[in-house]
Amino acid sequence: MARFKNLLDPVPIDDPTETVQIRKRASLRVRGLWWGGLAVWGLVLAAGWVGRGIITAGAVSWAQPIVGGLLLFGLLGLFGWNVYCLLAGWPARFVLQGYQIQRRYLLGAPLVPAAEMRQVRLGDRILQAEVLGTVDLANAELVQPAAPPGIWKTMETGHILIWARGRPMPYLIPFVRHPEARAAEIRRRLEYLRARGLLAIAEERESPQKPYAFWAGVIPQLVYSSLAAVAVLFLSLVWLFLNFVRPQNLLAFTTIWLLLTILTPLVGLPWFLISFLEWWFCVYVVTDKRIILRRGVLALVRQVLPLEDVNSVMAVLVGLGRLLNVGHVQITTAGRTSNLVMEDVSDPVSISNRIQELQELARQRSTVMQWSEINSRLEAVLHLLPPSEPAEQS
Image (tube, rainbow, N blue to C red; front, side):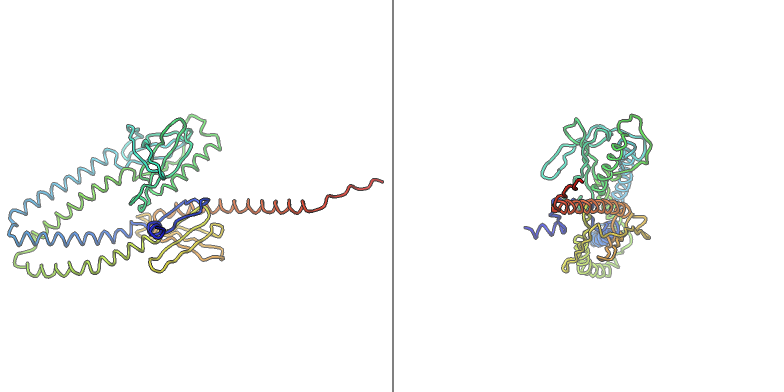
């Protein structure tokens, strides 16, 4: 059972005193382009065989208008669906401004939608939560991330729960990228405002807007739009084959297509499997005590770097990575341990900032522990010394 668990979670944290701050894999934004290319190539092969079947059956004359009509309907429907989602507030986001968190839409002022209830799994419990409209941080008591199971965890997407005074159920910020880091950011803002007594003041203070979940509610629409886009692409390919493959060239076309169909699984599927396993078993974990790198399928490479040994952290974004917000996080040490590089991770700047904050906290804890050890040793030494005798009075 433990081996199976290690396959699902290659870097388990068994220390109850250690909390995971960041758990990441290489971003799918870059690797997914290659996987998507393989999927599109498979779609091309399938469309070719469908077009060949229609040509062989002699049904081109009546199949062409049907495929063309379905293609036109799909294009118009896909365009209309995306426009509707955009105008209806598709890219909803949650903005931290002043002492409030508000749900906003891309095209308009702050809106407070009708209450929307969702079930959220938190550990072994299933909770009822209300999707956040607006919440005042003065009423917030607890901010914690909740990781949905399955593909959402793999996509580094989760929820944030905000427990407020006088409410039996929490507020919910759904489908947040990097929920642990975003929840920590809300907690830091909450502590900052409370430390300065700003939460007791009624007027809103100016502060930079911080979007939290631009993808909140987008992912389900993306799934539907992607399925429709795949259908439209398939119909487009069939339409092209019906218009450009002639019956007299059918034998040559069949021979070439048969070779491509045989070679694609022999070359593409092993490459995809190896690439997926390399991605799955390459995990970067940042806790409040250390940084862990685990990579390798057959040959395991595990690198552990205490936060006290971190000397500098630098985010590097180059070329296409700057557009996709994907890059490397280079972590150098003072020489006692080897350096560490988190390769092709999304949002590297936020990761580097969070590691620097955790590094500072770790150093402060280390300093406090050193002083407490010095004090305990001094107390022990003073306790062992004999009491001084009073001086004789002349």
